[in-house]
Length: 105
Image (cartoon, rainbow, N blue to C red; front, side, top):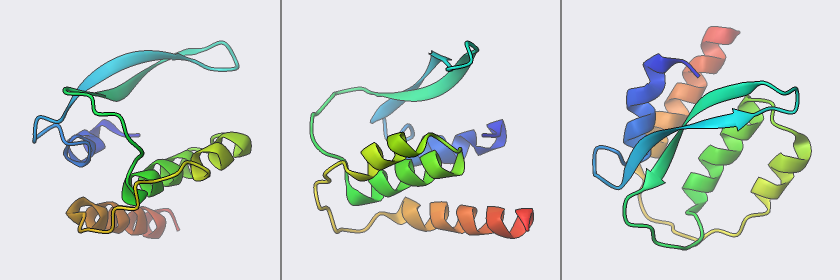
């Protein structure tokens, strides 16, 4: 992911609203490399299933980045909270995905 997408990702993750804070974590790959990755930590943790919209974004990211199929299947199997209300950021995400497809064609 390009650093030029960080502000959009921060917005999507609720940083502007004070819900999450960005953190850096070290991820060890199967090949033995250590990658510094951006993650988000909830300020006031509330346990519960993800919204269908959030699950969709996570699954899209897993597919886009070529994560192992078995991991993608585990993500797809996660139950959601069935939230059906508006999620304005989803339109931005879907537009960005379409634009990326057009630009890479």
